[in-house]
Structure formats: structure tokens, C-alpha cells
Length: 502
Image (cartoon, rainbow, N blue to C red):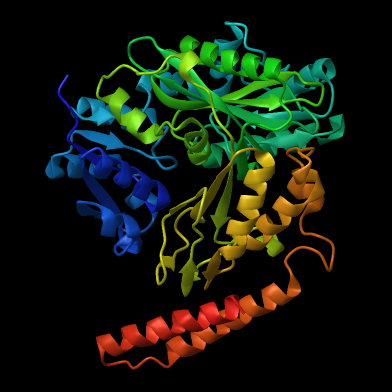
């Protein structure tokens, strides 16, 4: 198998930056692609080469398979790394890459198809003894069928999209009278989001924790688990805070989770990096949820505790190399926490925000890692995901990691658009999170906080003053001289910092 020398990064934002940096460390040529909205983005500035992909809407750029393949050939790429989101779990894209003679840095197309439909995935893992939530293994065909299943598994129950994830096409049902409307809504949303309106039924696990296991597999039959992550702090089934190891897990539970994840991966003939997700019930029983057939947003916390670079490993596996580790080699050390810093108005229900980032000041220091896709002056557009950066910390234990995360959040300045910084500062100090007694309902129960709690009022006032100063100073910039404009932009940034750090 010929070696990989150049990689097309079929993505944008912080994950594109992450892959570009890994390529540079490995001596590989990185090739970025960009839409109209991302013409001056950080990945474009960092990559060895960059090619225009198309207009800003994703369907005309980052989701355009034919255009991506054409650019890969034009640029002389050997491989394509899809990152996450967009086409990362699209079997047709993986197949198109392979047909074009390109290495796809991810699982095989047939594996994606087998795991992409949730009912197929449930059948696959149940066949090898991995526990699944009681429910159907086939899509439901009628309301009468749903009513019969509900009578068997009981309420509350969940209707879920067969082809989906991320909470889209999912409805909670607490009583028989709500079944008809919930079924119709779930089918309609699933059809709109995934082009497939099929749904299945399973019992709803009350107050679970969301725990996932990172796996790596090569093409030579080796599969290993790299530890588990707790991702229970979520809004609308989208993760906000992730950590490893999962707090409160017993050694026996941990061993069982890792072993179940490896069994599931083997059953699906999995190759490359992936994540096997579980729900952990209050009684300690865990249930298979799904497999994310790609790199996860929260992969840095696993890297911090294992010392294994997952993107390096992905590229090595795609090149046909065997994994250099055995399961007994995996001995995670310490604890790590990740906060997803989003361009969202958390106080208004996590509504996505857009605008120009007037000032970006990211934390540093011992045990702090920041994966960012934006810098000062960059524009946050309405076309894409709201993720600005991932603030990750490592500590010798969870208490140390929490203290370090709170310190890093206090140092962080993001001005120009609303962000989730205030939420993260509140959540990491909340007694329920600190004591690790939280579950997936944490955000719904505790956010927004009662009046007078949450973001420190004085801190919020100074942030607002800093933003106003930045905007005012920027408006005074001369319009004719580029050097003068840059000097005034620097003054605007300093004004923002004066306000934010008062």
C-alpha cells in the first residue's frame, strides 16, 4: 500500500485546524477547502494549500461530494480526512473517495451503512451480547404497532429516528394519548433531517448519564478501548461539557463498558477511530445507544489522559499500519475536562449568534489546551455550527482538573458575539456537577439559573463595557489607510481587554 503524503481536509473550523496541525507534525501536505464565507478563515491561513469549494450554504460547498473529489484530484491528495459533521459519516462520500483512488480516513462504507441505521446497529450489537434498551429492532409501521409496543415496554418511552442522531427525529412520550401526535412529529422531523421518516421505539431511561467509550481499530484485527467519557451535560441532546474518566464509575463497570465497546466494534468489523455510546441508568445498568463512526468533538480529553494522538492514529490506520498498542498498554492517567465554547446566547435558550469577534483572548498555562477555529476579527456566519473553540484541561484528578478549568474559563475573553462562557463558569461551580451527581437533565433543571445567580454581575458589566469600547474604537478607524486601520483595530482590542479584565 502506497504511503500517504498529502491529505485533503474536507471540513472547516476547529476540526480542520486540528487535522492540519496533525498533518504538519507528520510531515504531510495539508490541503484545505473553503466556502465563500470561510475565504479568510483560520484553516485557510494554516494549510499548505487551500481551494475554493463553492458558495456559503453547506449543500453547495462542504456537502458537495463531486466538487470535493474533483479538488482532491486537482490538488494531488492521497487521502481525505472528513473531520466530524458534514460528510464524516456519509457512506456515499467514503465510497466515492475509495472509487476515486483516495484513502478515506475513517471506517469502511459498509460499516457506516450497518451502523447508520439505529435499528440495524441495535441488532448487530445485541447479537454479541451488548445490552440494548428494551424496544423494537425494526422500524414501526403504524400507530397501532406503537400502541402495542408501548403496552409492553411501558411509559415513558422514546420515538427515535432510525437514520438519525443528535436528538433530531426524537420524541418523548409520557402517556398513550400523546402517541399519535408524537409519532407524526418524529416521522416528519426525521424525514426532513435525514431523508428517511422511519422511527423505532424504546423505553426511555429516566435520569441517565451519557457515557461513551473511545475505540481504535486497525485493518489487521486489533481493536482497543482508550477509556470512557461522561458527556451528560447537554442541551437539546447536544453536548456542552465532556470529561474523562467518567466520575463515579466503579472499576467493574469501567471494565464492562470497555469490553462491550470492543465487542460492538468487532461485530461491525470496525476500522479506524470511533465511539460507542451508552446510557448509564441510575441502577448501574448500561445500555448501548449508538456508534459514532468518526472522530468525536471531545476526543482531546482522551488524548490528554492517554498521551495518544487520535488524528495521528487515524492517518496511520488509513495508511494500512497496525496499531502499536495492545489493550494492556492503555493506562489513562489523571482527569480531563472539555468545555465547548459556542457562539450562542445561553441565557436566551442557547440561540445561535453571529457577528465579528472583536476580541479573542484564549487561556493558556499548565494543563490547558485550546482547539480553536477562530481568531480576533474573524466572522461568525449563520451557515455553520456554532462551535468557536474547545477549552480542555488536564489535572492529576477530577478536583484538580475542575480547579484548572475554572481558572482557564476566568482567563478566557470572547467579545463581539454572545457565547456560552457564562454557562460554563456557572456549570463547573454548581454543587451537582462538582459532586458528580448530575445526569442528562442537568441543563433543563438548572439553566437559566435563578435571578442573582450565574455569571457574576460585575464581571458581566465589565464584559459589556469592553464590547462597547471595542465597537466604539473600531468605528473611529480611518477609512483610507490600511496601516492606520490596523493600528486602530489593535487599539480596539486593547480597549476590549481593558474592560473585560478590569
